[in-house]
Figure 1 (cartoon, rainbow, N blue to C red):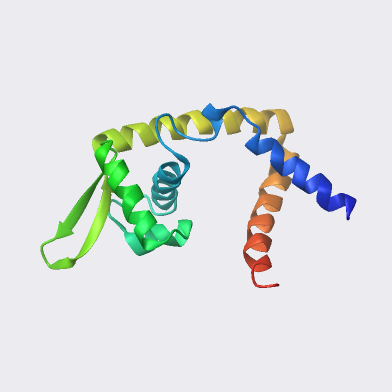
Figure 2: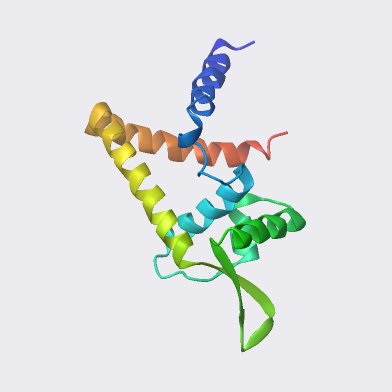
Length: 149
C-alpha cells in the first residue's frame, strides 16, 4: 500500500478526531449541521441570498430528496429555518433562516473565523496561502476522483 496515501488518510483523520464542539453545532446532528452550513456557504458566496431552493441546497449536500426534506423539518422544529411559498409560484417551496438561525449562524461563523485567523497567524502568510491553494485543488481533485472509477 502506498505510504503517501496512508499518511494522507492519517492526516485527514486528525480532523474527525477533533473534539465534538469543533465538528458540529450544539443540538444538531451531522445532517442538520450540513444543511445549516450549506445555507451559510451560499450566503458567503452570494451575500444577498435569503431564500434557498431545495435543489440549490442539495447541490452542496447530495442528500436524497426525502432525507433533505426530513432534515429541513427537524431544523424547522428547532426554530432555525422556515418554509416560504411565494405568491407568484406556489409550486415551489423555499427555505429561509429564521432570526434565531441567522444569529446562530453568525455566532458560529465568528467563532470559526477567529479560530482560522489564529491558525493563519501560526502558519504565517506564505503557508496560509499555500494551504488555501492546496485545499482548493484537493476539493477539485476530490470531485474529479469520483469520475475515475
